[in-house]
Length: 142
Image (tube, rainbow, N blue to C red; front, side, top):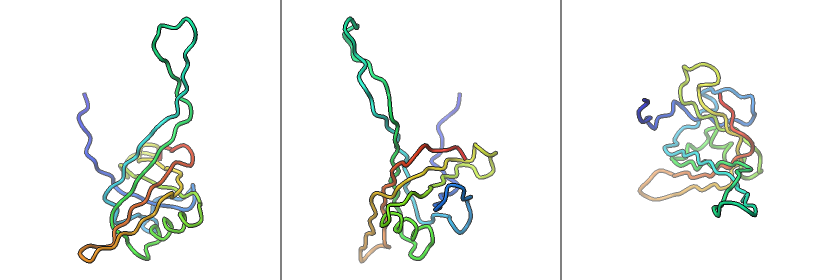
């Protein structure tokens, strides 16, 4: 029986196009929190003569990925995050879980929109970054 999995990711990459591959140029540095949260809309499927309990059917699925960490000013992926927010364009987050694995098992490519963007500044800290990415299509195994 498999045991618990370590919360370890080889790398995060952010790209402007769906066919981009992970590279040093699109590596998203400075992120220390990245949670992928899936949800689905539901429709009640209750009919006369049922057993008295609700039944449901999942319909549209969605995901949200809040990212947080430190801003790397001037880094191309960080600039892309901000520009995507400002222009409402779709970008692609590549979550590489095992870069040595075979194609389709390395991680996930998430098409997303940047729906919130926050830079935090404190006299006793580095500039923090918090963004919310929302799904813009189905994730694809990479």
